[in-house]
Amino acid sequence: MAIELRNVKFRVGAETYIYETSLTLEPGGFNILLGTTLSGKTTLMRLMAGLEKPTAGEVWASGRNVTGLPVQRRSVAMVYQSFINYPSFTVYDNIASPLKVAGLSRQEIDDKVHRFADLLKLTPMLNRLPKELSGGQQQRTALARALVKGAELVLLDEPLANLDYKLREELRDELPKLFTDTGATVVYATSEPLEALMLGGHTATLNEGRVVQFGRTASIYRKPATLESAEVFSDPPINTAVITKRGDQAILGKVASWKVPEKLAALPDGEYKFALRPHHLLPQGKGVEVNGTVQIAEISGSESIIRLKVNGNVWVSQAQGIHSFEYGEKARIYFNSSHCMYFGTDDQLIDL
Image 1 (spheres, rainbow, N blue to C red):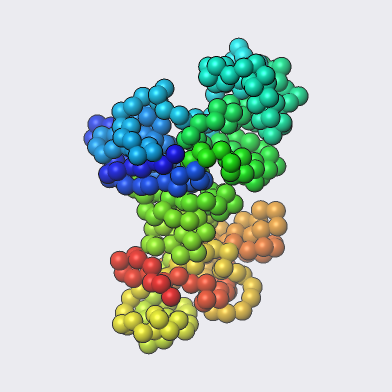
Image 2 (image 1 turned 90 degrees about the vertical axis):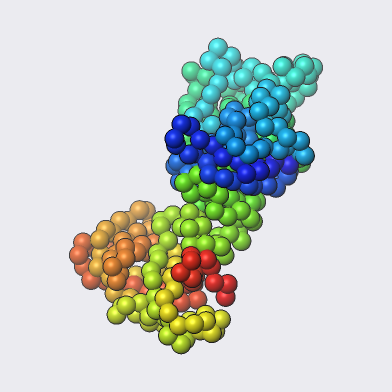
């Protein structure tokens, strides 16, 4: 199913939730909405589903204007972060409920229920009630019910957020495969850049009710069109600063300087912005050396997260291994200038 938003806006009273947005999703593919809480992901999904009507603009599905068409008349399934199941139904009957409404035979229902129960590791629980399940098991039941429906549009609103780590990793691998042969258009909302990268497909970066960029997930990560898109696609936050370019040199205050690529060197001298992902800024190594003052140092398992003040900016280093620092300590950090992204004063990426 091809889904297209044409100049869609959504307001409630004086508050704007979605600014004017035009977006055409990849039909029959995996589409990701990536953004922080309150960026507009859930609202966009509700507009696509017909649960909300846009204040302005139109929603089209498979070449047909479906603006205002109620959700009951659309081939759509939606799974929320908070699981929703029928409390008096067994797991089997929860999964089977959309198939019964569709009028499938008992054998067809049984085959489909067992297929998705096996996939989501629910077979031993088919005779249990939701109250007898863990939170993760209840969410898997809700997922199975959405998948078994065979809808043309499947909306998944952070569906793995409440699952344990191991199962979440397994389902991240399995979810795109589940829909490969169904022809369904899948829209998956997440606030985690790493999850978007793992799922692949196409991604729309969102910020404060606006779609910043849409394209292939890996391409947006490697070459974000704007600094805003780069910021959405980074957790921990991407490191940014204003530099002065003189000839072939980038100058970061009195802290550091390095040679820039030829295409940037050929541009007029003056101020530019640059960005560097946290995992490219390391407490040990070679390359450009920068001095900073430690603000926070955290060790999580085998990874160290260090926040430093560098030339008036707060930067983050995300490094493998244990690196101990004290608050207020002067620290040297390093980066390879080939990992830098450069932007004009208009925040547009300079394609090098």
